[in-house]
Length: 528
Image (cartoon, rainbow, N blue to C red; front, side, top):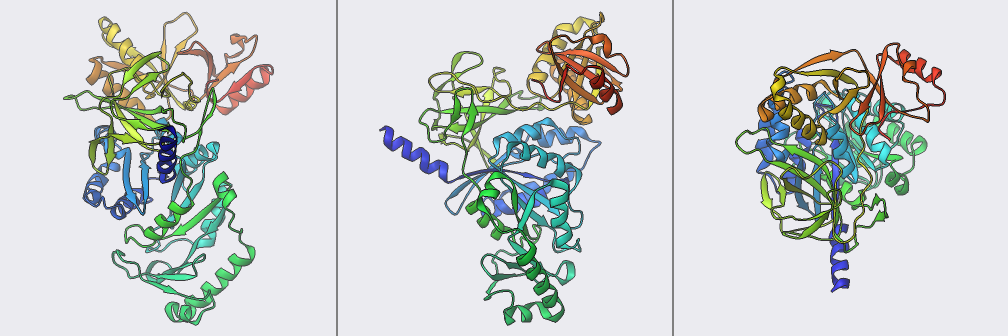
């Protein structure tokens, strides 16, 4: 039995690809996701994603954003089958208030697809997200989108990826023309041309050529474009990086694909190459050492908790990334932190827009569990024994507010709200060390304050006031003798939930001064 089970798990794991798409808002993530689903036969979704598009930009209407992220749980995980692979796409919300939620979602991915707008190049949010992927050393694949519009020179874009992000690139294909002049892309590995037809490219028109000096290419591209293409490809062959699979897997080299998602051009080629090149689910580090996917013992961790803002059913869904073993509905697992056995009775999988009760799942899959309030971020669930996976990263808050409650009689509900919402990872909470009983909230993006205030009122019935504080940086302090009186100038010292000392600073200057004054104290960006 065991052998057969181990083989089944290994076979299923090998066909899984779990990745996140990272991009700046408006780079075309929604469209790309939609087109990938189209190939996966989940076409019913095509309209639904479009329909939601309008809500994506309504910065002011933050409840809509929350709806998009909260109630439609579907926007978190999309799953489909293609060419013998089971594909799990993790959606990362593209809102400018960068939430930690996105960062944590990336811990559940085995690779990332970076989407770049050909006209705008590498933008601010792409940078931030890239850094998180970089920290984890996961493979990154790049799709340069919107070739059908006038964009920047492809060499400029590659140079920017290398300069700004510090990762080398290998173009898998190369555009022939751009915008109005776009006539196709030249595939460097397969030496063929994918012709641009200008409409929806449900079927790809491909011409095989012997190499970039083939006369057929001259005929396709016309004299002027052909000359340009020949020069560019020659330059790439001579001066560009060689393709190196090991460097791709280590996240040091990114394969680059060009295309236009809205016209479905280059998307299928990208998907097929990606599935070949991207890694299957990898082992995860725990306090017992690495946990291998093919292990018979089931394990996984909670990387996201989503509470619905729908007052009719207050269900919370905890998202579990399966790390090892085989998941079966109704199985009993150990909840390590709470130290008790729990039964996973109604797990859900998100196949395109339908939520289905899932019967079985394997490493790399993401399932949703109903949370009666027992799960926290980073919780490990496993069969037999008890180990925990490495903690999920927390990020240093950049915005701070003092919280006061309008009706002191509601203190109990207020405390419950703060406890639950900080467990969910919406906000970080700090308490003052001076004699005053002050509660300070820290977040990464302004939106999180607004959501916190709204949810306190709607879900816990508590009206709160938020008073903005001038601090911009938080650093956790580690040292034997920390003299808090040295943190007076443009800074303050508070305690976090686990009673650790944290210094808040108004400016980089204040931070630098404090570091100079306290040479034997270590200043950490994230909690130790």
